[in-house]
Every structure is written in C-alpha cells, then in structure tokens.
Image 1 (spheres, rainbow, N blue to C red):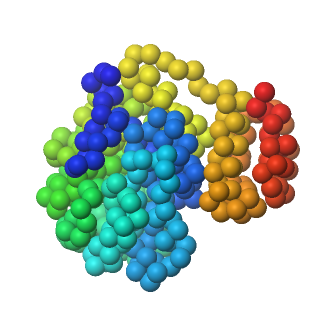
Image 2 (cartoon, rainbow, N blue to C red):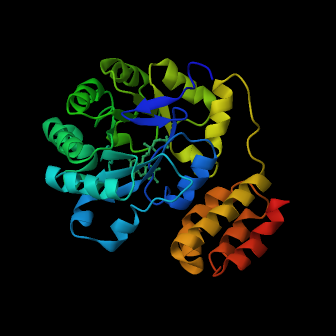
Amino acid sequence: MTALLRPLQIGQVGLKNNLALAPMAGITNAAFRILAAGGGAGLVVTEMVSAESLKYANKKSFRMLELLPGERPAAIQLFGADPASMALGAQAAERAGADLVDINAGCPVKKVLRSGAGAALMKTPLLLGDIISRMVKSVKVPVTVKFRVGLEAGENLGPLLARIAEESGASAITLHGRPASQFHTGPIDLEAVAATAAAVKIPVFGNGGVENSEGARALLEAGCAGVAVGRAAIFNPAIFSEIAAGLSGGSVPPPSGADRMRLFLRFLELNAGLYGEERGLTRARKLVGYWLKGLPGASGARSAFMRLKTLKEAEELLIQYTK
Ligand SMILES: Cc1cc2nc3c(=O)[nH]c(=O)nc-3n(C[C@H](O)[C@H](O)[C@H](O)COP(=O)(O)O)c2cc1C
C-alpha cells in the first residue's frame, strides 16, 4: 500500500483502508452496504436515522439499525438536535452492533434544519459539542461526526467545528467540502478542507465530488486521512477497489455493463431478503435508472422494471444485459 492508501484507526476500530462509503438516505441500506464493502470500501455508513424516532420506538427506524454480516466495519448515522435523545440513539445503535456511531451535522434538507438538526448544528457549535460529549459518555464505540465546510459559499467553519468535535471526544470527522447552500452540486472548497484537516489530530475524511482515484488523491494530498465517496458509488459500488488501485499506481478496469447488471441482480436478491421480493423490487425502483444508465434499450427496461413483482421476473428482464 502507498502512503495515500492505508489502513486507518478510528478509536479502537481498525479499517482495512481509508476509503469510506458516504451515508446516503434512500440508498445506503444494508443490501447496498454489502455491495460497497465487497467493492472495497474500508467503512460503510447507514442512511441517517432519526434519534427522536428511536426514542419513541418507531419500528421503521429500528429496522434501519439492522446490520448484516458482510458489511463490516459499519457506522450507524443518527440525526437529531437533543443531546439526551442522541445519547439514547447512540446506545440503541451500539446495541444493534454498530462499530461506530456517526452524527449528521451536514444535512441541508429544510425539514431536518427546522428541527435544529443536520447542518443547523453548524450554527450552534456548543450544542454540537454537547451532543458529541453526551454520546461519547453513553457508548463504548467511537463517535464520529459529519459536517460541511460552511453554511454559505466562501464560509469556512471547518477548523472551528473540527476542534470542537475533537475536544468533545469525537474520534473522526467526515468533511463535505461544499457549503450547505450548495446541497450536492458544484466544486468543493479544497483549501477549506485542507485547513480543517490541519486543525485536528483525529482523522478527517474528505468528501465531495470524488469519482476516481484522482479526486481521492487531491483530498488525501490536501491532508485528509481518508476519503468518503457518495454518488459515484451508487451505480458502481466497486469504485473503492478502482480508487485503491489508482492510488497504488495500478489500475483495474471499470465494470462492464454485464458486471454492473450482475451486481444489480445481487442487490435485488439482498433487498428481497431484507424486505420480501415485491417490496424489495419496489424499493429498488428509484435506483434502476442509475444501474441501467448507458445500456441499450435502458428506458424500455426501466419502464418494465416498474411493473415487476418477483425476482424471477427481474432476472428475466435483466439477464440479457449480463452476457
Ligand atoms: C441521495 C443522497 C442522500 C444523502 N443522504 C445523506 C445522509 O443520510 N447523511 C449524510 O450525512 N449525508 C447524506 N448525503 C450526503 C453524502 O453523504 C455526501 O456528503 C454528498 O453526496 C457529497 O459526496 P459525493 O459528491 O461523493 O456524492 C446524501 C447525498 C445524497 C446524494
């Protein structure tokens, strides 16, 4: 392994490499996380789970805590603005077997901001510090936090928030290099990321816009200890192996359409195991466009996919693409 690609220690948890799957609501369920772990990610992260919902024993939220073999090490991400609820949520995540508990302090969605959670915590750093320290005291597993470089373009809150996180006991940070106002588009502020990584001793995962080993290299050379990949992993969960090879001076070819379809069928199988065949397929509908992208007749296959009820039907539809 080169110096850029390396194993990483987060508290007592050892990662085989410093490439993480970024949390994505509606995407990073257990089925997807297994593909990403199999595709070379050193760490996978769940979708964000509401600490308030866990407090009120919401069944759907508890199901989101379930981790499967084949997706380790795994972080469970929580969102919320109340330190006591977040501490309870962290205990629930630890009981569910989380290797790490992550705090969402970067979500720009209005509903989340209105509750004071997500990126709103960047405006209330003392509250964020309180949440972190309460969670750290409540669980044995390492607590990590994910936030952005700022709320508005040009703002760099990274170093301040990173120091608060470190002093409050966080074991690592994921820093999305775009301000909250930019959601998920536009360039990242590499200087702000570098200043944040330099401000603390705990590992900082740089995040935003990484699509290949060059993107990962830029973040690592800016001083990040690791890299988190979001959207580029959605239809290529093996991207972590590609990035790892690129960082080591080698290369592995990107997956062919047939490779991708075989992985998608595997995903559908795992989804069926989690939710049952029909519901698993319904839940995969919003992803099928990503997976079929660029394949001949993709739009017809996509429409046909919306009507599927069984795995056998899915196989019949997609088998043509696996050869
Ligand atoms: C569909 C979608 C859902 C997301 N959900 C979450 C989430 O639950 N928690 C979180 O911290 N970030 C979430 N994010 C942000 C990603 O983790 C990541 O920071 C962002 O996509 C930038 O990385 P990328 O450019 O590699 O995609 C989400 C992003 C997308 C596109």
